[in-house]
Length: 312
Image (cartoon, rainbow, N blue to C red; front, top):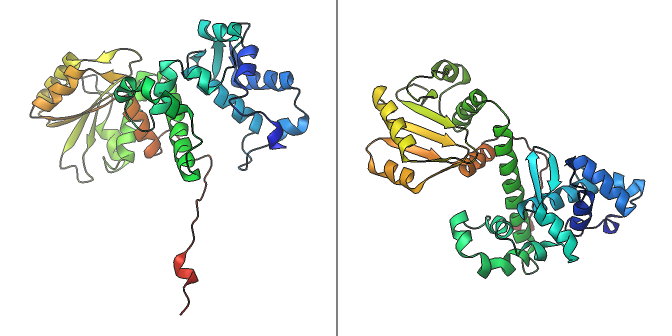
């Protein structure tokens, strides 16, 4: 029965056609309209993944949507809502088959595919040389495919986390930063951290947290919820000045955007220890330390227990 449901790649044209009218639609609505377009039976629509928590149709439409967004054929102006872009309209009008190979002509998509093994800057310089490798997975072993899928899932989750943060207040983001520091082992307890990290609005310090349970030293926090603004050297210099005012030696500057080269060079030149965490690193740390995320499915990969089969 699963074989009768098109793959996520095969569903890309259907997703584009459902959105061809230019209207803003939810993933659920796109899924329902795609199912109608394919003429899926009730049994096909109801068929769920092994976890039982999501249907195959919804899962595959969701991944088709994700890849089309990464390639710029769709946009998501708000969480969970999509509409077609001029690039997507052009793809429909071209009459070409829209699949991963078609999407690989767009640098944003190839960079997304390469992000599993290298940084964005490295990916930019190798886009053309690596395009075929990014698309052709036939030579990968099953273990390698699982690893690559895991990275792709986390990359998509990271994007969702940052979008979710944008939709909330600056005060919520500051509390999120404190929660992350706690989850990483700083601060002792939520009660202690809450008393030490009140919203101060004082000298560019957004929070203070104990470095250890005994409170022998403190870490000062700055949190900037930027979408497009790159944090530059002046912002970091201002933060360093705020640390001076509090006689502090350590600080963490966290942003949902990125840091300029000058900002990173500045922290390497000063005596104070200031750690810079950009949006991609923030999302990765949230996933690693289970802040704002929960486990949906677990897969146990098993191997032969050699000790069991030893004969004496």
